Structure formats: C-alpha cells, structure tokens
Length: 125
Image (cartoon, rainbow, N blue to C red; front, side):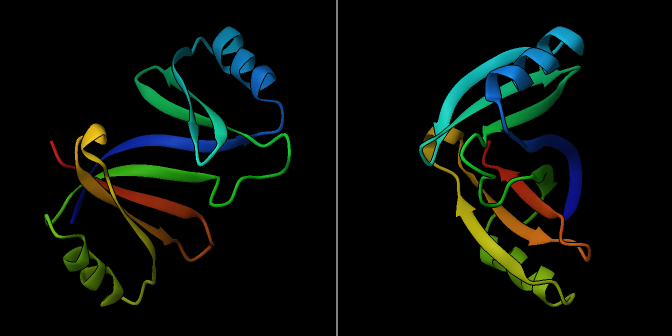
C-alpha cells in the first residue's frame, strides 16, 4: 500500500450552518455538496483543492467523526490489505466497500497509536 493523497478532513459541527459560514466566508471554501450520511446532514466543502466534511453534531458528536481520509494505491481486494495492515500489528476497525455510485473501490478504517481515526480509501476508478 502507498498513500497517494490526503483527501479530506471530516469534522463534527455543533452548529452546521455556523460552521459552513466560517469555512465559506472566512476561509474562502466553496460548498460542493450537501447530503446525508446515515441520516445526518453533511456539508462537503472545497478549501483550496482540499475537501472538508462537516457533520451535523447538534445532537452530539457523530460516531467515528472526526476522521481523516487518505487516498491509497493498494490491492484490489480489501481483505488482502487488511491482512497486510494487521500483520504490522494494527487492528482494522471496519471495511466499507464503495457503491458503484461512489465509483467502486473500498475504505479501510484504522486508528493511529493516539486513537486518531484514519480512512484508507482506494478508488475503483
């Protein structure tokens, strides 16, 4: 596996509208998408070519957020990458296979030694 890019930061927003306004109006981000993930409102912003996902946390922090996504070049089979990572003593928390709508591929979730959640994402394209 090789990291190819840092894709996004995904953060909790205690007030989603206020957070979107901060990133948009103060830092110059562009709102690229507003949608829901597991029933939670999410705003996706572009900040200088870097993606920020803001998750509505008005009712409390969202599970598994914050997490940060890096793009990878790795095996086509997520189970093969899982074995590779776990052989290095790191526990794989979750594997998510991307839908065709998402372009295929997969994501593997791990925590670094300090407990920071990372999404290792292989594009199917």
